[in-house]
Image (cartoon, rainbow, N blue to C red; front, top):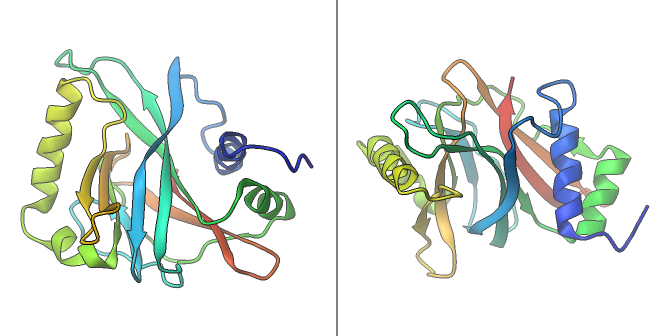
Length: 207
């Protein structure tokens, strides 16, 4: 294995692994790329589910810290109203360096850390426990959907709504379009190093 690989290569490997048996990789869309969309500030539990929130199982055991968030964004062309359209295929949060993550992937140290149904939808949120009250609040999903629609009309790619963390050095919540629907499930995949320390998290939809 190439120990000098960069994170971009590892992101591609993770996406290819997740796509096996589902929609294939790479996707057929002419414009698609990974983007670093910000940092998630983790203080305790992490949530990932479609909006509006109905139910979800929180992800526990993520060490507190600030972690980069990378998203594979697919540009699907104008929607029925002629506005630019894009959606997020997979969200990846590395907690270790690319070599450690690549070794975990190759060794098959990947697990479903939740083991339960996670509702999905056209918009999804990834958030820290500090944002739980906001994520569950009345009207949050509708406001987020409206903000994403306005940003899409303005041509913003990647189209991600971020809510700043109290510390001011990252986000406590990210909301984004998924291209999915209410009939699908959110999926969380965790990669671990040889000592079973969390090395990477990947969030996508399970077809």
